[in-house]
Length: 210
Ligand code: PRP
Image 1: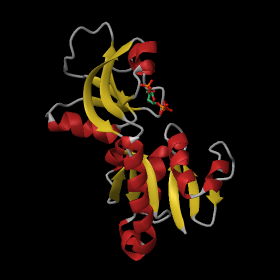
Image 2: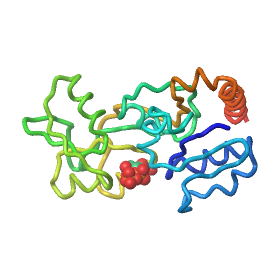
Image 3: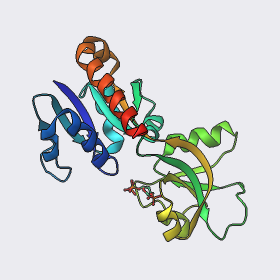
């Protein structure tokens, strides 16, 4: 049996649809359930916060996990990225108030984000010193309430930015859902993991072509 860390939230529905191909019982897996472990003969699915998926995989709580590339980049754990699942496509971008004419950095520039590491690395690589304000959600509020000059956040449709009077000024990274594995389990449970990954690959290819 494979233990897979599954994130609540935006990727959940698509992940469930995929897993139903392998195990029809997964249709009863409910993200709003108080029960955090869903077991069938094939899988043990554990429901976690999106940012915790690599943590569960790295520390061996789960053999595999599914999460966005954004979350993998933010953590930088030594896990193995097995597969791009080709859904959950989005980007990590810098956004500012739509009235700002030009994206310009200045001394004391403040950036609000929940992606502290990605933001630090991006501006660090440019050799620019910015103040990073860590938030845990509703990041779009920060420029409106003059907490920050810009935000670094996930953009999918762009609706949240638009509805809050912000605009995307620069894409930092592109992201999509990835299947990740614990490096040690990849070796010791190879006989279980390999057929699952091969079938998943076929399924994704079919979906892409169909
Ligand atoms: C993300 C992100 C934006 C929104 C972008 O938040 O932080 O707020 O989605 O999506 P859009 O471009 O399609 O509007 P999420 O829903 O993951 O919740 P969070 O604010 O709790 O992190």
